[in-house]
Image (cartoon, rainbow, N blue to C red):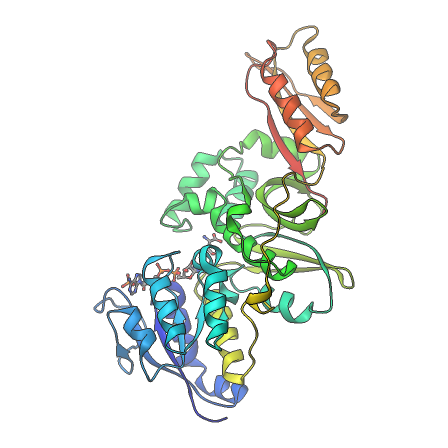
Length: 428
Ligand code: NAP
Ligand code: HSE
């Protein structure tokens, strides 16, 4: 097979220009590895006049990404615009209908429409590849679908949003409050145009739902991901967690349980000496567990021009080499919708309470916990300030339902001066 593989690239922002750069700078290397040249025939973006720092003069221009997707001289439609609907969805559907393979970095599109798009692509004999959509430069989709194909996957975990990990680790290292570090991240250009996608856990939840579908052979079900963002994490929580040997991470976890598929993206405590606990800055980490391999840990850059374009090119190269695979690793027609687990797996929890520093206060809290069946493992009281004494507890393993009963009862106690904070401690 020596015909060139002809790409149409829609979206010339961070990832799109990175992809163009690699194809221009490494043409010989890519051709040698693929056994055929990789060429760009046409591109699309909103503004034709913008200087993007790459030479686009040899490529046809389309204002409309749908028209780009339908061009006869395009074999692979590379969707790097973003957005769960609108032009990204319309152009991806048009590409499949026109008989093109698709490469995309768009987790939002696939989290919301992945199953329908996979059905359409496979019915048309086309592939959709999306390595860049999850954990940027880390080849986690390849690891799950190919390297770990001989395993029953038991659990997938990870830190999949670099911005949140930057915020949490910067709060810790600089001792700064959330609002100040959020603003710093904003100034550095780390935040998505809609920052709630990052700090609300939505972007990472999109990624987790894609990994869950592959790992457990189910339809993508983003709506079933239990989401909690990092907005309520205080510098005190970070310091107290550190005092007790933990770090706080926005952690995604998916696992198939007897109660159904558990998918959650939430701030959790992890041991500070674990690989996840040691993860600093905007780096991502994926922890994959299988019955035969036990555990593997993948760590790397989760965003940025080079890393994300690197992942896009991995997919392009597979297509150029003739390697084809169902979108989620198994034919989409056979994928069932998993029953979502109504309750999460029991775990120990970190509790931060603000108590009036007076006789009997702690006894009331202990009674409430005892009545709900929640057992205390460790406890610390810090020096009281003018209004309250901060009390930290680590519980023994408990159900979230029991904990919620205890938290609701605690909120009603006359000795509590603020709402209790509860964070799950994940065993990693
Ligand atoms: P970006 O820098 O904002 O670039 C988006 C590009 O899409 C721009 O070139 C824009 O055109 C173009 N575009 C938007 N609407 C369009 C339309 N209607 N028609 C034609 N072109 C349109 O975004 P990005 O950071 O490269 O992200 C692209 C995709 O990669 C997203 O799905 C994102 O979630 C994903 N991703 C990004 C990263 C990262 O590190 N940036 C990492 C992983 C995944 P103009 O330039 O003319 O405005
Ligand atoms: N906003 C995302 C992050 C970009 O911070 O990880 C990469 O998907």
